Length: 87
Image (cartoon, rainbow, N blue to C red; front, side, top):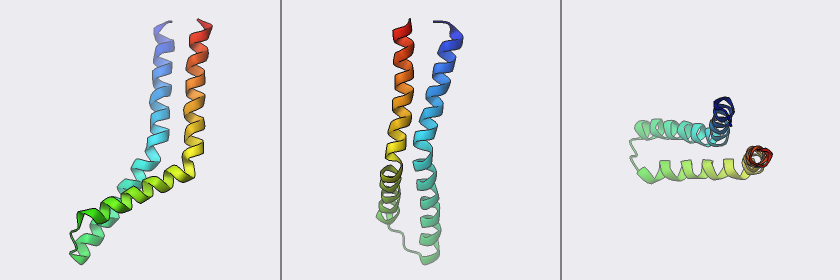
């Protein structure tokens, strides 16, 4: 196994992690900013409101995109196992 192959595998692994975690992180960040603006305007400073909304967004993303996320992870894992079996 040469360094180019290892670099490619790591690069693909990082890309898979970004594709899987990115939508949840970005959407929860947007909800957090919107909730912070809402709380600043209304002067309601309740910590659980933001947490519950972010939790609901993450669960919704997992429900809607869970199949795609699983397929992406399985494709990456199959590729790794094929590389292991081919060596």
